[in-house]
Image (tube, rainbow, N blue to C red; front, side, top):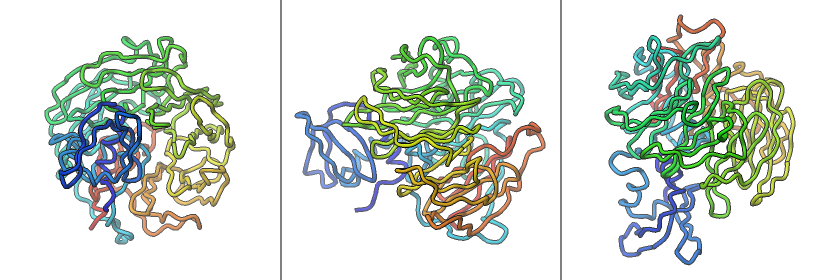
Length: 467
C-alpha cells in the first residue's frame, strides 16, 4: 500500500490525543472497528479498542471518510500541505516525492515574489492553496493569508502590538493551521485563533496577562502546537511554564505550576509513549515531558546559555535537543517517568537553524565545525563540512535544502552519511533593504506541494522545485 500523505500524517498527529471512541471503517466499507486513535507513524495508525488492545494498520486501509475526517474534512489539508512549524510531523522532513534532483544553473524557476506580508522573521504554514504567515505593519503585528498560487494577499488580521528588538522588530513565530482554524502568536505573546478561510477572529489570549508569562529578550518565538482539542503554548513564569488552551474557545485547561521557568524560544513537540500522549519542551535549564492533563511526567537538567532555540527531536523513546552559545546537544532515553542520559557533547552546537533526523542520522549546522551529520543514537560525528556557511535546513525527497543566513544561498544537498554532497545552488534574489543591520536571513525554508518558499523580511519568494 502507498504510504500516508504528508498532510494526512500531520493532521492525524494533531488528532492523536483526542481519545474519543468512535467507529472506524476500512476502505471496502465492510469492516468496522470501535476504537480511539492513539498514534500515527510511518504511514501506520495505531488504534486502541475498548478492551485496551492495540491495533496497528496502514492509514490508507481506512475509508475515505475516515481519512477525510482525520484531514479536517473539507477545511482540512491536502497532500503536500505544510500545516505548521517544521511541517506535518514537526520534524522538517517532508514526505513529498518527485522533486527536482538538480536545479538549472540559475536555480529553479521563480513563480512569484510577494511584498504584502510585512516585516519580520515569521515562517510559513501552507494549507489548501493558502500560505499563512505573520508580519509587522507600522506598529502592529498581523496574521496574513496569501494565495499560494499567485502571492496575492487574501486577508490579514491584527494579533497584537509590535515587538521591538535590536536584531529586527516584528513577529518570529509560524502560524498553525488545524480543523479549519489558524492559530498564531506574536512577538509580545498575544495568541490568536482565526477562521482559516476568512480571517475572522474566534478568540484571543495573552501569554503575559492571562498566563503570567514574561517576554524574553527576543520576544515570543514559539509556534503553537494544536493537538486534538488542545493548543499547547509556553508562556513561562510563575503560573506555569507550559499551558494548554481549549482549541475552540481559548479557555485555559491547565498550566504546569510545578515547573515555572521563563519561556525560551523552542516549540513543543507531541510524542506518544505507551499509548499515552505527552508534550516535550526545551527550556533554559531543563527538558521536560508533560501529560495531556498537564502533569509533569519527567524532567532533566539542560545547561542552556543566553538563548535556547531549536525544537526537540524524538524517536524510539529517545529525545534529542541542541542549543547554541557553546552549549551543544543532549539526548536522553525515556522509560515512563524515568530519564537516562544517553550523551551530552558539543558535536552539534546548533544556534537556531534547526536539526533534522533522517534514517538514524541528524543533519544541521554546528557553530563548532560547520554543517554536521551526527549519529542520533550515539551522538558521534559522522562528517562535518563548512558548506555554504551557517544557516537553516529542511528536507524532502532524499535531499537537504540548506539556506545560508548571510547571503541567501540555497544549496541542494544529498542526504548521505558519506559527506556534504552539494548538487546545485542558487542565491535568493529578493532581499530586503529594511532588515535590521544585526539581522540576517533567518526565516526557515519550507517545501510544500512542489514549491520552495523563502523569506527575507517583506519579500516572500516562491520557487518551483518540481519542474
